[in-house]
Length: 139
Image (cartoon, rainbow, N blue to C red; front, side, top):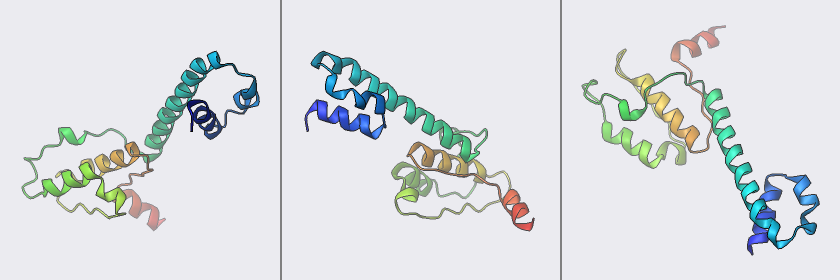
């Protein structure tokens, strides 16, 4: 596929019907700005998609995994957590992750970090605390 066909395919994927309606009238010199226009559209849509998915995930404020205090929980399988985050096994394998521990040991922080990673990988996520989930089930 040549560059112009690829651009047209990208414009079709973006449903740029106005541009596509006049595609056959474009000159070779037009394709420089058309390329940039399509790149802007793709970048903007990607950013908006991430923003929308983050808002829907209801993560609120949280510390990124890089700020997680690995020294605080006395028993934690750091390697398993980092492996899952690094290789995103939890997304590829449709695995379940269960964090068990006392209050204040970082379960919520880890859960939000995994949800954030899912959103950044193009997936959707929703953070719900156990208390909220149980309250919703009870009602």
